[in-house]
Image (tube, rainbow, N blue to C red):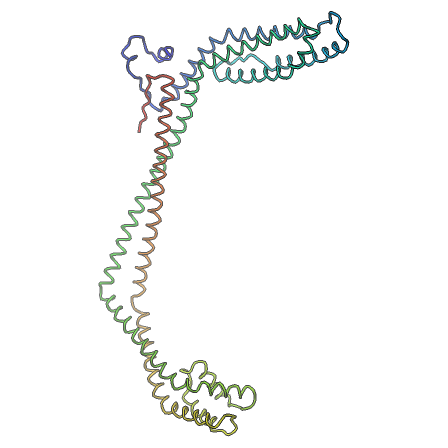
Length: 425
């Protein structure tokens, strides 16, 4: 690799030769281009003679192929053998002509061009030999000298390609290292850009989560202050009073219903008799009866005297014992309904008053604080998950970046072990 050292200005015996040459990562493409061009220049000198030899081999192959195609039959051969030889000679000439036409000596003789030319040419040569191998068996018998010349020229052509292959292989390691370095350098740039983008996004998320935490702290403090204030204490007392009023209302409803529920069976019986036409109720009485069955606490007190008349009516088809029991229950309801109903209405008014007070209190502010706090905590949790994912992604990118740097340095070391790459932050 002395020519690379000379190319970069290193002199035999200088102090620089025993040290290291440092190249900034940004300057690496130019260094790789120069390395590639220097190797290609050396190859061009090495292969210039080979390409002349290749042209000569192709020219000789073309001439020998023409001689084979024009050769006359000399000697005494079976007519079938001659016919078969001529037919196969046409195939040999065709395959060789196709091969010559496909092999064009390249004008561009850098490494990549030579490698592509070599690979294509060898493939064409192999195809030619494969397609003409059987035909040669027949042409050799009738046209031995001409077939031998074609075969020798094909072998000479193959020998030139073998020499070209050796030249390519001698430089392949360095060229492959250069190409790998190009690829790794591009990937390092991409990874570095991705890391910068991800880091900026992570920083943005950290700022946002800190802002969320500050806002949550402010809302939590406002909620705590509210709960310590007079409004919260008043609200707590009002809620307790409302709950107590609710309990009293339930008891009043139960007391009122207890006067009517014992009559429910009798009322259902009267309703069926009315609907079947076996007994007729006044429209208002029928309406109150339905209310009594569906929602007894809303029945009017005037219903019970009317109900007493119904049970006392001889036209009502009901057993005397049941009538007597029902009348006793109706009279009990008449005696106690007004008091129970008055108690119920008073408790109901108290309950509605407490309910109205509670609705007009500061519960909306409390609910607003609690909702805002819950919302902020949920947004913080989701953002924390995003940050964890971003940190994991950043760690993966950094690890991949370090691996790529190691691969690049390995390739650079194959090209020139005295060169060090400076990866600036």
